[in-house]
Structures are given as structure tokens and as C-alpha cells.
Length: 267
Ligand SMILES: NC(=O)c1ccc[n+]([C@@H]2O[C@H](COP(=O)([O-])OP(=O)(O)OC[C@H]3O[C@@H](n4cnc5c(N)ncnc54)[C@H](OP(=O)(O)O)[C@@H]3O)[C@@H](O)[C@H]2O)c1
Image 1 (tube, protein in one colour):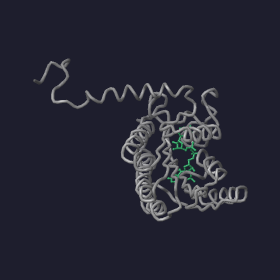
Image 2 (spheres, rainbow, N blue to C red; image 1 turned 180 degrees about the vertical axis):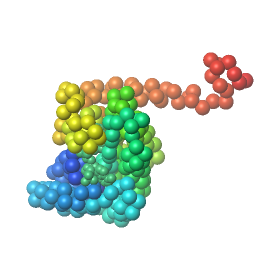
Image 3 (spheres, rainbow, N blue to C red; image 1 turned 45 degrees about the vertical axis):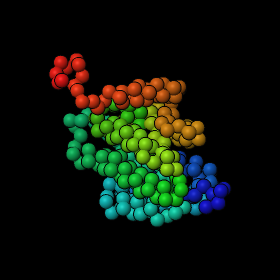
């Protein structure tokens, strides 16, 4: 890669919604692309449009990331394509059903996609990026990571809390090895996600819904600002910084030899 060459961004969940906007924006910034999702037709159409409008090279991988074999193909692409310099770990699925109404297959699919696939792809990318001297990993979280009360059906929010915690671990392990880590935590965003999750986006109060274009533009601006956690709509990032400082202030007391005095037990 030359100094001007940004390399290739691999984007999961690129056939629609937030991922498709990332594809458009990153191609305009000069990245070549590898677009991943299940629907080959939608990926091909998007790849054609983007390569015609930007002149970038756009490849597609039709893969269901909940299937082990497909996941391995994408891991292999991250490992073997030395031009890949960025992973946008965006594919995700949700459900607005109450926990007692969720069937086991839906629970397992959400965890397989939002947790297992995201983790395995991040691991493949982080390892490859260290060997390549650097790279960027963007993990798609959600405000539900810190505000699970906002939506019913705790599994989806739980997977996004995992994405935040996992991103913190990734930063801890790889941040000083040239790997840039960002976790993006959007609020409600106007995509097909809502319809697919069981609630049309039109059912939400319109004053809490952001367009996917605005959410991605803010996320990319947050990346350029050097943010680890980007909340597209949070007005003051110092509110997050204070929240995270409170968490860090707990650290010295979290693992000690004696139970806390308030329990009246132990030595
Ligand atoms: N929309 C919101 O309000 C919101 C808010 C916060 C966070 N997020 C997060 O943002 C990310 C993108 O969501 P979105 O709103 O853009 O949703 P979306 O419009 O439903 O797009 C989801 C993308 O993921 C792909 N996908 C779904 N299942 C897949 C699978 N098993 N294997 C591979 N790809 C799969 C879909 O393509 P195919 O169907 O072609 O596979 C599509 O490209 C998700 O992680 C979501 O949790 C969304």
C-alpha cells in the first residue's frame, strides 16, 4: 500500500441500512471494499453502483455469518487479503418481542450473529492487523449497551452490552499494537432493522429516530476525532467520559481478600 492508499474495508451487513451507507462513504473516502451479507443480488447491485460512481474496486461475499462455513470464508478473507485495513463489524439482528415470547431459534440466531460472528471476525482482523502493522476495527453496538431499559426482550440489548465490553477488551489487548478500535452506539435509526425486529420504525416517536446517513456520517466523524465510543446523538461526549470514569473508579475495590464491611462477614 502507498501512503495515499487506504487499502480495503470489509463491511459486514453491507447489503442494506447502516452497512450500505458505510460502503458508500468509505468508497468515497478512497477505500476499496469487500461487502458481506446473505443476499447476493442486493450486494451485487450495491457493488456495481459504488464502483461506477467512485471507481473503487468492490468485491462481494454472500455469506450467512450464523453458518460456520460461511463465517470461516470471511475470517479467511480477513486473514489472507493483505490489503484489508479496516473491518466494519456491522451485521446484526434484533427482536422487540418480550423475552418470554422469544423462541430459542431467535435467541440463538441473535447471539450467533451479534456476538459469535462479531467476535471471531474481530479476532481474525486484529491478529492480521498486528502482523500488517496496523488497521481499524469498528464494532456496531447500540445505546442498549448502556440503556437496556429502552427496549423489551433483553437478549438483543445483552448482545450489544457484550459488543461494548468486548470492544473495551480489544482496545486493552490491541490498542498499543497499532489496532484502532471504535465501538459505535447508535440510538434508533431508520432502517429495515425495526420491521425485521417486529416493530415498524414508524411506530417509534419520530423525535428519537435518526437517518442512517446521519448516523454513519457521525460515526465516521467520531472515528476521525479519535473517539473509542461514538454515540451519534449524545450531545456531550463528556457525559460518556464521566460514566466511564465512574466505572474505572470501581476498579481498586472490585477484587479484594475480604468481603465488604456492610455484609458483616469474613475476617
Ligand atoms: N437500526 C437501528 O435502530 C439500530 C440501532 C443501533 C444499532 N443498530 C445496529 O446496526 C447494525 C446494522 O443494522 P441496520 O439498522 O442497518 O439493520 P438492517 O437494515 O436490518 O441491516 C442488517 C444487515 O445485516 C445483514 N445480515 C442480517 N443477518 C445476517 C446474517 N445472518 N449474515 C450476514 N449478514 C446478515 C443484512 O443483510 P442480508 O439480509 O442480506 O443478510 C443487512 O445487510 C446492527 O448491528 C444493529 O444491531 C441498529
